[in-house]
Amino acid sequence: MNTDGRPEPQRLRVLIANEKRERLELLAQVVAGLGHEVIAREIYVKDVGAATERERPDVALVGLGLSSEHALDLITEIVRESSCPVIALLSAKDPAYVHEAAKRGVFAYIVDGDAQELQSAIDITLQRFAEYQSLQGAFGRRALIEQAKGILMARHSIDANHAFDMLRDHSQHNGRKVVDVAQAVVDSHLLLVPPPTDPTAAEPAR
Image 1 (cartoon, rainbow, N blue to C red):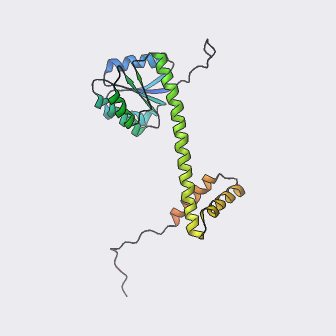
Image 2 (spheres, rainbow, N blue to C red):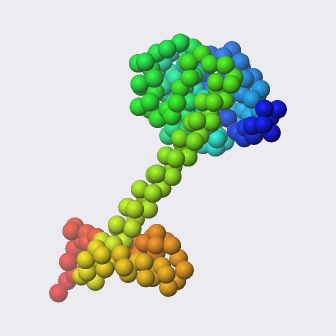
Image 3 (tube, one colour):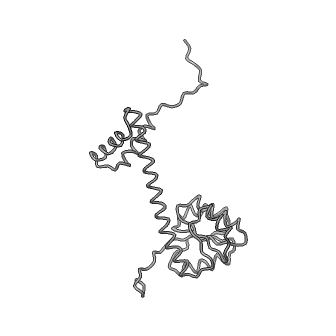
């Protein structure tokens, strides 16, 4: 607990990126001062993707340096290789850059903030990211169940309600989640689908 009774912030593994080395070092000091671990400091776009994939940070902070395109490319590489949220750091308001950064996958941004504002931005971003992942998982589970229902409907000539009843009954009888049963149906169907015929293959001699 802090002196004001609040819980201590979680110690995070943070990747920081900025084309300006001096800003990178200052940011590293701020992050360390908040009690987090800086696991990578990247300047070049060609290196940041590999570092992100290798280190698997909890959050990434990308500063806007001399070139907005460079910063946007850094964001793109991190988002492509990572399952962590990205926060854009700006020294002044730049709506056009923020709009482009959002299109590249940034979860939040902060303008010329101090250490506590940065910590608050991190806390809010992690909460939003967790909600986003949960929502993504829910959509994925729903899509998987619908796919399994479609397979059962085609195989047994039944409607959607009966197909779901089959999934649910099997789930209850075997102590498995409906989504796990649906995954098994989809996996087995993929194995049973015959391979496509090759129209160029020669017919057997008679």
